[in-house]
Length: 338
Image 1 (cartoon, one colour):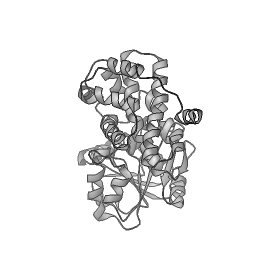
Image 2 (cartoon, one colour; image 1 turned 30 degrees about the vertical axis):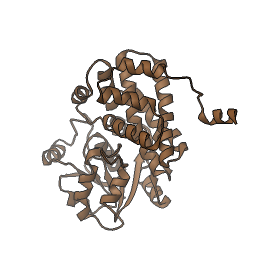
Image 3 (cartoon, one colour; image 1 turned 90 degrees about the vertical axis):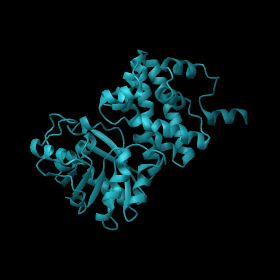
Image 4 (cartoon, one colour; image 1 turned 45 degrees about the vertical axis):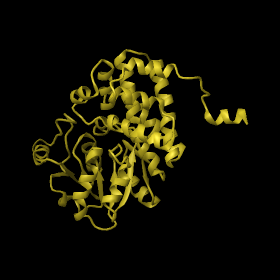
């Protein structure tokens, strides 16, 4: 059994703490606010995020980062915008060679770095790994069968984390493509937001299927241009996570999109969802990265117009449907004309 510190007591961090505790690991769950930590300790339930799910007795609670340092594994689960500041505060307590597993999804604002790169900058003495895939906290915390993928530069590290997390209800695969795993988990939030907009507008299954299919193409285009493996986007961290986020009401990105499709602004939708909607921040990052890399991402571009420029969702749909004709497979098209 291992000692694990989970940094971040939102829904996902709490769900992972529950998963590991049920497997017999000793877990410390860190909260940014002292009152949140005290509430978790008092009620042994995360009422705002996972109501009705009991927290095992072998989870301890703290708001002191120094208490999290003496662990076999440190798991970072804060919102993406808090990763750097939290890691910076944690750095003084962490030993050289510490394994840190990031399970947060998103890209850093302004720099557009993946979160593993942010952690590497703030914690250069540590070995950074990432885990992603189709995994709603509401289901993982209740033991509903789920699969994820872990990526690390060192295969032995990936396999050690795999062994730590594997259980009858949580299956973990390994993948050496850290960048692809992270980009899949980040970019799918933009497409999920668009899927919600489609639902909010009252459009049909055909429309959503088209969005998801062409969305994964855009995700893979950008990923490959940045150095990721295309195959990763066809796995759990890509299409797997995309499916679950585009179709489930557990998805905060889809829920926010539904509200936007019904006429609310992006700001109003985020306020009503009352949770961090990573797809909004990631949309801006994806648009600017696509322009920098010279990658065509029409869905992301239209989403950006709706989210940041006051564009109409109906105009966005018309613009996408009215684009010039294309060959579905760029590779096949190149073969035909050669």
